[in-house]
Length: 575
Image 1 (tube, rainbow, N blue to C red):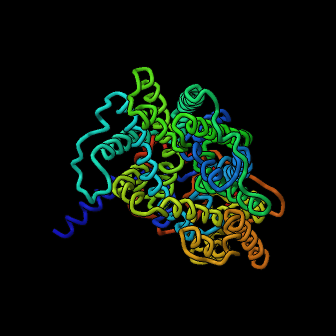
Image 2 (image 1 turned 90 degrees about the vertical axis):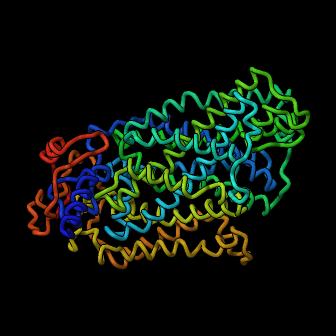
Image 3 (image 1 turned 90 degrees about the horizontal axis):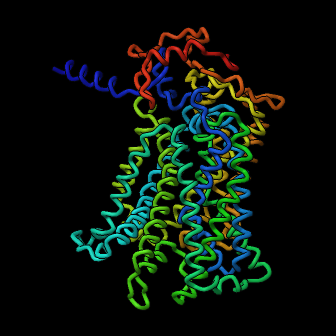
């Protein structure tokens, strides 16, 4: 009976196993599957305009809309806060291009890139951190998307505002808000199904629909206010050093808003047709797109001060006022309700695109690396969605005023990961990767280091965290020395510079293998790479007994198709 149960369990495990190259060892099965392999030419379908559409669509979201609000509240004038947005996103675009080039050149995702700097097994910790944060943010962003759904339904049925509440008092939410959240969550599920190289069409559609809706909101608010309001005439309340630090904080908040995307840009850039497609398209579109969205948010909020007597930075709250005037309780007419519906739908689509780009795909790719034998991007994306639902994000947002501050601050610690990765690729290795060895579990492989962990990378990573840790504690409300606050004011740069400099020094003192003496990117040679030891005449008797051809990948391909890929395998920088 016990043998029968074991055989059934083995059969079930074999049935749910995902695509992987035949002939891999048991250890390699923990490093490779269809979604982790270098992207073959057939799936490199992202051109420059796809990246333009991606970032235009991503720039139009609620976080970007209100990013200037905290700067204005901190004493800056509108143009100073907008200047901070421009500067911050130019820096963010530069970091994005640096990490994205790695993916665009070698066509590998963030989990595989991190193996070069943290080790084959050591990379699992930063990958887990990124996956956990993506799951939490997925829930939070879905809750915000649910607020958009509430406005859409209220635009059609005004009685939805007063839906009877059947939720327990201690639940932290009510029936109306939960139904809206669940509807947004459920409607997001089909988008997770599509492969990453095809999901670009969602961002293209979003880029055509969402920005015009934002412009319409912009014009509507100005017309209702008969002008652009008082905020644009409001000067700065800070001067001298205080003004300088306030602007630095504004710049850092813009970069921190991008910290997660800086790390995981290779997840998308690996589908680029050629490296330059992911360069200027991203470097130009990011600051322009996010600055324009921020400017619209500033002017609309300024106009709202004329209409309702108070500046309303949250666009969803302002739209709810468009439905029912809080001063007169007068409901909107039919055309106004239709306008609110369209703009709310645009914000919901914006939240969906942002959630897929920044959270679902990232979490799916990271989870694939954590358990590649049984998880692919699609399955990981659905796990992310389930976690986002199960975590009850309304409780997190309602019980702690510091929660969003904590999440934003914690994301800055990803700067240490980015610092190590960028220094490793551009300075230490000079653009050279031995692709096959990034999937090798042999202790003689150049990325295996010490028991699969790269102590130099981890030392630099910890140093980058330590420089910010005291200021981070201050950011969530604790009393800390003023000096720590100043350091934390430049948090991303502090973590990035300390981690990258530490890594460079350690690699100079104790050199690492698989480096080039001159700049040498060999990504152009990558076509269809086979990573099995046998493909390089490796002799290894630890091949898994149940290693089989690829089963099912995201396209529904079978083993015969994947064996065709293996026939064209090449050796790049192997042992």
